[in-house]
Every structure is written in C-alpha cells, then in structure tokens.
Image 1 (tube, helix red, strand yellow):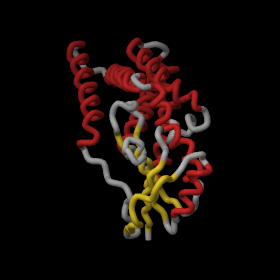
Image 2 (cartoon, one colour):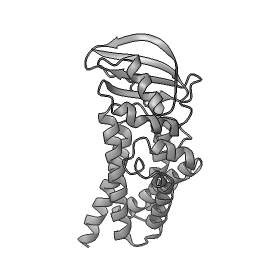
Image 3 (cartoon, helix red, strand yellow):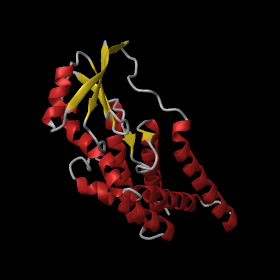
Length: 248
C-alpha cells in the first residue's frame, strides 16, 4: 500500500529541489516525490511503501534544508494507482498551439514553393521548433537551468550544460533554416535530443511529478509522455534526414 505524506518546507527554488533530489531518490522507501515551490508552504509531497516522516526529514536536513511542518495526515492509495494527477489536454494548450502554428507556417511555405518536398518540410519545421523553444528558454535562463537539472542526465552532472542548452537549440534552429552543414546539424540534433529523451524517460519511469522545461519557466507544463514523444520525434526526424541524405 502506498503512503502519501505532505510537508511544509523551506525549499524555495528549483536549485533547492535539485540539491535535495539525490537524497530523496536514494531513500528506498520513497517511490516518487515532488515539490510545489509555487505554493506558499513550498509543499513537499512524498509517496512510498513504508515511508516515514523521520526518513523524509532526515533527507531534507542532510541537504541543508528544513521540514517546517507536516501538512496532512497519512493517506493511502491502492496498489497500482498513480500518485500524481494525469495532465489534461488543456494543460498542454500552449505547446499544442505552438506546434499548430509551426505546422501551419511550414504548410504555407510549401504551398508558396509550389509543392511539398518532405526534406524541406522537416528542415523548416525543426528550424522553427528550435528557434521558438530556445526563445522561451532564454526568457529565464537561470530558471530553465534549474528545472532542466532536475531530470536531464547531462545537466545533473554539469550544470553549465543547462545554461548552454538554449543556445544549442538556437544554433540548431538557425542551421536548419539556412541549410548549414545538414549532416553535422542532424547528427548533433540526434545526439542532443536522444540524451534529452533518456532523461525524460527516467523521470517517467520513476513517476516523478516535476515541471517540464521544454518551454522554459513561462508555462507550467508537467513532465509526461508528451515530453518524451516531443524529444523522440525530433531525434527521429534527424535520423530520417540523415538516412535520406545518405541515399541521395
């Protein structure tokens, strides 16, 4: 039976959450957890089999922070039930709207060109995708780096990668739209997006309820299979373009 505990903490930012992450992740009795830093109580919610308040407090204190109060009594769930709320289509409205705009723009460009060339379609779509998504990340670079460090396997070890990632996307977007070194551009995209997808996959397997950093900190998008599909799609398109290019 899964036990759920909620605590008021002094975890004020994503950097604080990143600091406590390895300690909570390493506690065997904790199956998943999340921190709502937007709430006034900075609520830490922990799900686990046999998890206790003392174990949670010890983990938070070892990270240099405090559990100020236990907010709710223990609640239980049946085995197999998800401890997190499933995101609705409305939650992803900004992401869906952006992707719809990108598809619409690419379609108009192809109509203006007089016909559909699939290689050009993918290149223009990926260029627009990277430029738009890098824009939102750059609006709050530090906030993005804090969020991205929570689940990306590279950013967790090298924080500077979180700061560099939006600029990598920006350069990839420019490369796709200008046709610069297509083989190199697709290889870099395949590597970058595959690594990103792996980090998302690990978070989904762990059933962690955290914010997706794909649109920076402007929108509060939950991490879900949508994020995994998004990263996998971009990696797949890069691989397909490499395959098509090698046969031309």
